[in-house]
Image (cartoon, rainbow over all chains, first blue to last red):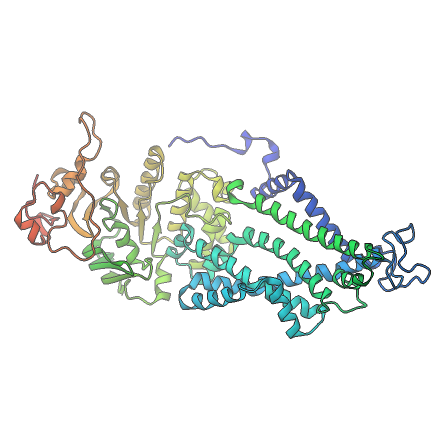
Length: 299
Length: 319
């Protein structure tokens, strides 16, 4: 036999990393080469940290009223100004990030927890169970995501928890369809057939061969669902179906700002910008991840 | 051990779909002895792969399989699914044609070899890893300790096929079914893989069923050959007998299609293997056969033993 073998001594010592570490480093480099994805990552991280560290970094509490500064313009004391009750807008945006991030992340996790098993079952076993699941998701997908979430939130009653549940249920049908599609494609892969020929049962096939190979698709779906859920939380709170005043939330702030729109438009502009940048950051991150994890560019 | 390991009798496979039925295999019988290398030869679409996949019930649900496949005391075609899963990969294992895509890209090859060991033999993680190193060494992968931690995309096609063979051999199976194991590989690597398979038979006593369309490969490694045409057995003989005294015009046609030094050009067999909706009432090869006559076109030739251990299904056998 005569093929050339590359031994570790032939290549630079830096390559003496484990293959896993080498692959991680490669992925990091690919991300670093995409400035928009990097920006998205850091902004998303900043919002997450703001939510987590709100008690320490917010200059005031969310409900502290400064009666000397009602509807005040931005100043060194109140960087973004104050609202009609003299509350510091910057602080409320920082505290409000909590509701947004919690709703965004937990709703997405809930949607994933519902969609992954259902999509796997539909795509793997096919037959009548797939027909039932697919028709039901088709019906649910006929409703726009927000309409569905609003409907569910009305049924469940107004609170952040219920809004999160409503958003999670609302996002699930789309994710079911994606996991089902991926499962359908992956179950036909040669390595799945080879695993069956080697005596693998259904659990092995599903959790060793199918799920690990759709993680990149799911990761991207997650980063797309999070901003949708963040906007969804703002909408529900705006409509009074989510976070209840006086707890701060960007949607509640927007709703309150309506009455003062001509007098102090900044009351609406700042939370609006927060929603915009937060959603944009997760979207850019998701786009970047999709490019980076695309198997056609990694192999 | 008895002198037959696997006895297949009257195996028929039909695919029934909404677009109609296809008869892929028609009353095929053959046997396999321990440590024997059996070559199954034929053009694309003649039912070779379907035959072997049907034995482990790897075909989709649209396939209707009848007949009997005795492996030891159990009939593979009617064994309960749980029993079948214990046979698959442990006593009878499969190597597929596509080494490039037959390994799971998400895990290192070491884990994939070890997984079979842990599952079928109940080895510990460490034990499975040590055995995996031995197996990669057995299939002649250099520096197996390092290769173990690599992902499939880091290996060449030949290396991946070796890993597939290592997985297939992991539980010391009695039968290794190799479906065109060398077709996707280049010629020098092919020779290495065939060499390896012969070595495995000699050292481990594993019986091998080699599915191929390449008579050169068969000449190289097989003990006995079954030539299939349109789902039926056209001819069966020990390998030397087949090459020295081919009887069926189809076999002779296949032999004519092997590149040879000095020959002007390759001979081809005109036409294609027919896709059959139902078993033909006549010799399936008749439309392409230079010897076909009224008899071939109206009756099915039965297999007969024309020379010792040499079976042929033809009304006009001989050179």
